[in-house]
Length: 241
Length: 316
Image (spheres, rainbow over the protein chains, first blue to last red):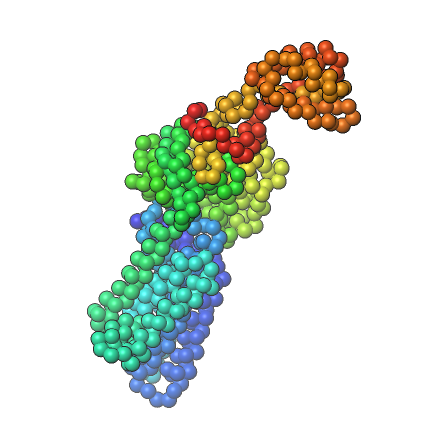
């Protein structure tokens, strides 16, 4: 297991060594701040809880985009630069390789997400919100990050081009996002399937409202696990070709 | 001891390696030769664990790699044709990371980095990032990463490709130093380099081993035993007359060289160099040169890559 941490530390240092890590971080904080100021704070008098809900709503969008941007390089870049051979010939399993890449991106994005905490704290200047609501909202953001990163990671394992990986990852994310629209036009039982597959509408809104359901956590954990396993399968298949 | 048994690899329906067998003893330096597409890189990648074989098995010291694939990373060091480097990492950081990844502890990794840097002559660039290195230094860094964890077996795929003549000589000495205390497998298009660094050769053609052995073994087995090249000055007719009288002549070819110089290639069933020299001088010709032909690696390589006359594997 210590080899997983060796790769995690290497990947984290790559984010910090690479301007892209800083650019993505700065962009997320800037956009979150602008959206918070424009729509959550600056849209007239509101209940503090509504402001917090709006914050988590906008943050979920930037988090998904940041997750995609951070994860599409994870394998595509290794293949592009020819360094994938170092991981394939190292004494680690494909699962450890995928898991360590995922954990590194999750820690980076998690840290970035937690840096936005000054925004909900600003609500305390003129209002009052529950710490529990804030904590649940952040747990929701981290769960959404986890699922989005695993999707981006899987897309990254498919191609040596980060552009192609980005397009594939975005397509999967969008399909999962719009499942709730399909649910509205489909007949049962398909409507129920689409509704439950929806990445955001059914499963993230409760977190925004400060409600945490086990089913939502299980959903995000399942999506994460599914795409991590698919990534492992892709790596294993590449050893044959 | 490394044993490859019936090693086979298909890319889709296309066979890249077909039933390759070889044994490599501890401490041997073995060169893989063959034209582009012969299967050298595929065999080396399978040996390094970068690629899984479609069939067959590889054993190192009696342990099947398919059963213990994770141990392979500590046993083997691999340099692909293009050195795998992280451009933004410093040389020392890169080697330390790979040492740790391949199972070394913190202090062992630090001392291993120093050792690898010294062996590969990277001391002057150890604090530079990899993207600022010349191609020659990148190749050295590729070798350093392949040996940093102290593997039993080092696999080098085209280690001299893209290097200038001075770098090739430096690389040759580096590989010779490495070969002193570990098993080395390498492939190269530079026959001179392989000859200088390897004691044994495995020749591949169309994904199969067509010959293996030392240079002398290959030369004696694959080239005509009595073939000689002669250069004389004088009449071609006199030369033909003098040589055709000798016993053991199978074939004679004449080429008119510059001036009155004549190049003669004689195929014989036995060594007739002394008799040929006496006959030509006796016929009044000036003997300018006489040497046994086809006794070097280049001749062997050309012969087996042009035509494969029967299966010769396993006779070494």
